[in-house]
Image (tube, rainbow, N blue to C red; front, side, top):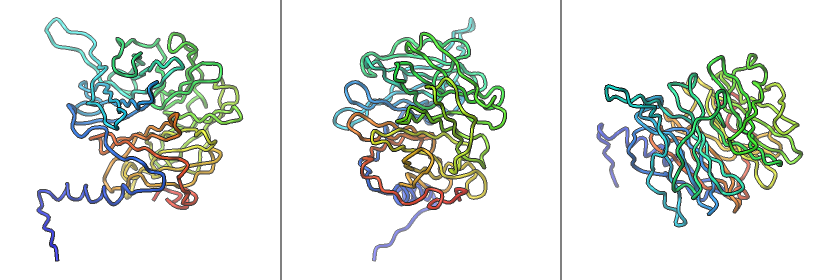
Length: 372
């Protein structure tokens, strides 16, 4: 009989490896599960985003540095080649402002990159820079070679942040609709439209006057009937995902209402699939009790209408862990690509065939109405 001896010094690593192998389980439709990188120049990372470039390659970005909010935090990018290999992360933007007369440098942290590709194949990378989410501003850089090189970043107009965390969508007329939000005067959701890839902007909102419910970081789900659904992060860690609807291409929005799905005050992301269904990646938890931050379980759910959500898979589940801030897209070949923060140490990447996803039943019934 084989005996295993676990020494105290390696117990935490042994626990993490065991938990990862148990709870990062296979599920129907899963094609790939891997890390974008194993080692990097920065110890901490968060808030990934991804896009398919004109060559059909996946480009991912995130912020990385000493720790969230530290001036060392910049925006890093990696590209997956045809053989499935990720390039080494490179820093494409930082928060350096200027060098002082005494030789020191004023530098602010960077936050929440968002990638998007226009019809001409140009990649745009929106991100935020500033001392905190209450005092940051919007920045923009672009790549005309699929993510290999990037332009000198420029600052967006005063009061415009661009997409604050989740990917924007192009409307039928060609305008880019961005879900955005602010935190300096309560948590308020608003929207920003640009008809010319960031040269001019129109601001819509904030919706609900931002008073009744604190919400940020909307993810946009266009529906086949022309309506657009926005699902938002809820400031109340004991609350629910909040939704708003637009029937005029993002120029006006309904009051925020809650879905049945819980939200522990953590980022979510969704995508409208080519087959008419909707896919959502989120933490089906609340804060408190067994779930202090509510980010130890990351879930995948699917819906025929954006309102009734079926459980598909637990992507992660580890007590004390953090799996958060997902990003999800569908590429031209029909596959779904997902990234998310793994313990603030690495970015995990999944590829899924949505045609093979199997419903496990109502998300609230499978995972609990309160997320417990």
